[in-house]
Amino acid sequence: MDRIELELYLNDMLGTARFKDYCPNGLQVEGRRRIEKIATGVTASLAFVEAAREWGADALLVHHGYFWRNEMPQIVGRKYRRLKALIAGDMNLFAFHLPLDAHPEYGNNAQLGARMGLIADAHFGADDLGWMATLPMPITLAHFTAQVEHTLGRTPLVLGDPERELRRIAWCTGAAQSYFEAAIDAGADVFLTGEISEPTTHIAAESGVAFLAAGHHATERFGVQALGAHLSEQFDIEHLFIDIDNPV
Image (tube, rainbow, N blue to C red; front, side):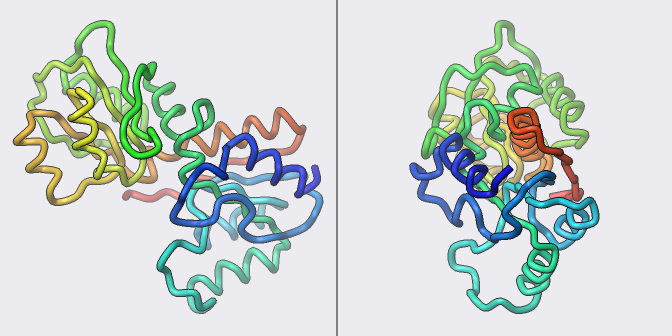
């Protein structure tokens, strides 16, 4: 597959032009023109880049790429080593941040909801990135926590009474703890995300709404996998998801 063809396809499908993001979305580092093998991962760490190169990838597709807003522009240290490995391997780096969170089918929120059997019926927060589902029957927080742990393979940090009944489930993957109050205002009984901040504990206690932090990395593994599988099927290219584990 031609690199330019892939770039245009991804930008169009993910609607990158409509997002004001913290980083550039799309092709971040140019490599070889012909793409036959694509490696997907959550973050373009040096370990991921080296593993993808060893596999023989022509392109890397990640959620967390490079060139974040307000970071130092100098290409030194860790940034230099990552870029050096990419360029030495003549590999393309595609990165999609908010567009991959938001996509209704291949996005992180869509995929996490699908794996947990949640069907969204509402959205909240900036760019409608927060998702909400109404359960047909209430479940306890303990039951929901067990479901999250089974789906993600992680024991989440939980704020709330285990016996509390839940009907409205809200979620937003990654570092979306700032969406907690928007979820409360939207009528959530519980909010699931990746990370937690100091004020979160007080908000949960004072609102009575439960909160789960299940890991930034853990909650954002599924979108890029689904997108890679789609590209493999659509364009007959090899795909490998490389999971560089991260406890955060």
